[in-house]
Length: 126
Image (cartoon, rainbow, N blue to C red; front, side, top):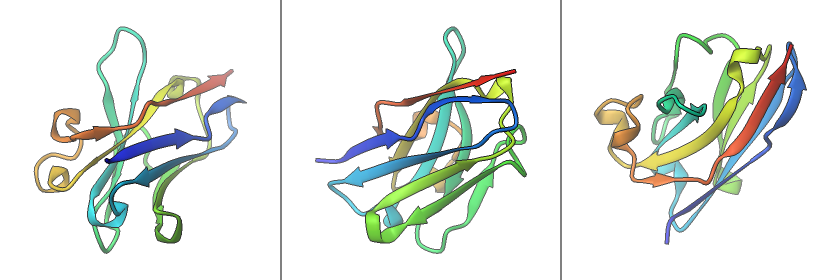
């Protein structure tokens, strides 16, 4: 059974950093397209970053480029989202998602992912 569990959310001031983790079980995350998404109440879920299977090609939403970094810890079967220079507009529930084929389709579309974690809240105060 595939399971994704996010952790690392919290409250920080603008300019601060947080490190989110997505621990995978039931499958090997490095063989899958692993995406990070975020959502605020009343808005659609939006893609933040993705890491491709195998070699680790990454892509980012324009709003987070240069501030967020996605990576893998294969020994722990975990995907990391390092978030620096956080802004109040980064406040959201953050989710990781997995799918074998999402990176071949459109990584930023949440409909392309089969598996989702429960989310972790990130709050950035000004």
